[in-house]
Image (tube, rainbow, N blue to C red; front, side):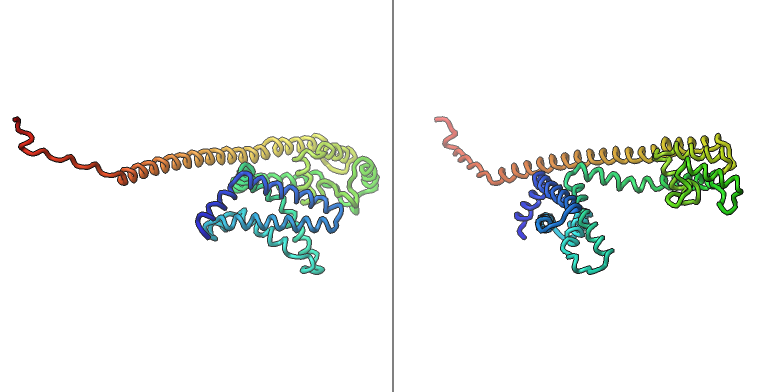
Length: 316
């Protein structure tokens, strides 16, 4: 391909109008995917293939605008788009009765909506901040997991109900009274601290603020009925301490790390923009100096003035 053609394609690809066109196509395809969850007909299938051809055209232009294959592959967004486009050409009849493969193909088609993240520089910046934060948040998540595990084990030791087979008649009667107050224990819902998985899920509910006060009231009722051998004060202090620790400390640490990475990314973006501007200014100065030098070399040399003879210089 000629360099002039490639440069033209590069200007088209990085143009803001091209990004807006891609964004509109993705939004229209997202609407069609949403409509397909309600109904499916021939028009929907035709529109899906039209959008697939549009995505193929966009990806082809981005590929032709690259100087080489390495430049195209080094961009992870291009690889993501390539997977999504290739998956769109696999017909459902090819997978047959394999339900898992059919679900994967449908999920990959839904992932076309995520292509909106690459259409604008601001969205790409937010995604890069999130990916960078994953590295920073590793130790923060480990700390949160440790506290979550410790509180889950303590909650099991303190608030787990005794086994039904080991309950006395008085405890069985108290259990029936508890079932009138709380939706657990039942076939649909385990008690909050029945085992490790339920305890962790209960603490995550408390962390999100989803009915954690109801859990506290129900456990207090179990304490009054004598089903758990801890006072109501311990129940209250346990859940308030976990909510303060999780909602006001651990989550804020994670939010602070994300904000710090966002500020760092914005600063790096600003410095990169200034460096590009300086390089462009230096390149413009160099081009101007080179043009002046070439113009000076191309200018005709002045004609030498004739020397005066001695007879012309002597006075008469």
